[in-house]
Image (cartoon, rainbow, N blue to C red; front, top):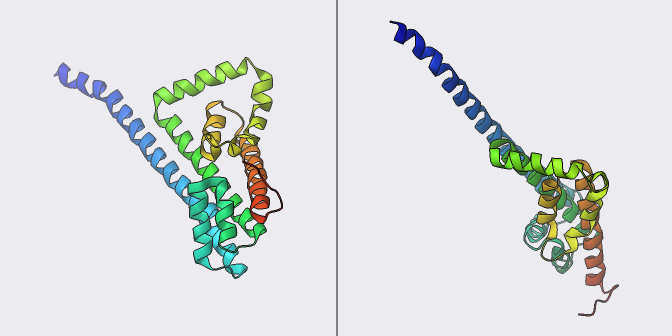
Length: 198
């Protein structure tokens, strides 16, 4: 009889661990859906609606979106090849960039919450960054140049900002600023206003 009384007590932590594990999985799935929703609304729906308002064929808008996802800033040349206005190309590509950046942040945050290893790594990084207050405060500014670099590009620059635990709002702002600058420059090249010698 005493054995029957002890057993439920042993099972309580197991049940609470299982419930915690389930809630973390559900939260991870929720964040995953949120990332997909952000990407769909900001990177796809808004540009398509903008195209409809400006009487731009939806097929061309979708082609530019796909080109931006695959070619990143080089999609400026695709947009010009599709006969789209340079300002429209810049605006659509910027919406795609913002949607993707916010989605990547959601996915990375979900990983950090789900994985103990990632959680330990981020805490360790935060502790190391705390030793360098200037880098912690102004490090996100360096993200301006990263979208222009061929090897790093847009996606890696977001991961770098997240790994170094820089302020999310600042990181998104500076990555977007760098994106606008490099895309604007490539549009000027496509228009023949700027000549680049390789």
